[in-house]
Image 1 (cartoon, rainbow, N blue to C red):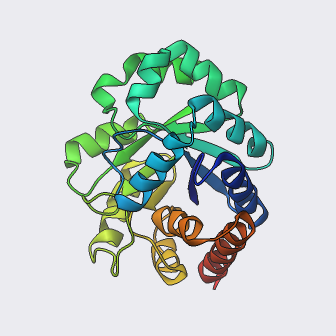
Image 2: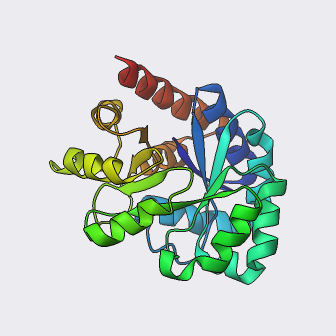
Image 3: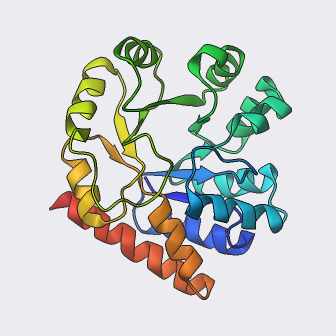
Length: 244
């Protein structure tokens, strides 16, 4: 499950990157909506969000990219709560449904406060994907899993997004514990930056989410063509490693 920041470094390039994800065999695409205070994101994705906002990227642009690729690949926008709340639960859910979103990730909206939005999304057939972290208590984890939709987004550690030299040694045990409670697949994100790490996580998780590594590849590219080539090569290598 590759992640991209809509509107980074500009709208046309992000549309091309989204299509490259599809063409390279992504199973699900996590589509980031730029936000001014992205508390879950590390410096690479935070910088991409800032630049996308400077380009004038709006939520409507995010939805257009979603609609562009949703006919062939499942798309799950990642949106901060401020955006959803300002639009309103019913309208927010309706917009996601109209543009083909399969689900939505709202990292700063805890399950305790998600009731009205969750109900509106469920009525529209859009899964509200919940997050679980290593420091989530067993009691709370079981509660989150009991109401899980789509998949569980399991955060590999308690830091913000970003590439890591090593993944936590306890990650496999955590995934198994969550899978024991969850009726839906469990995908792991945060820190996965190489095909080898993707393969490592793929041995015990149902899904592998790669974000900062791909956003960095786009940032380092000197053209849209170079960006699409770089992300395509990474995704192809990751899929090969997962299949080995």
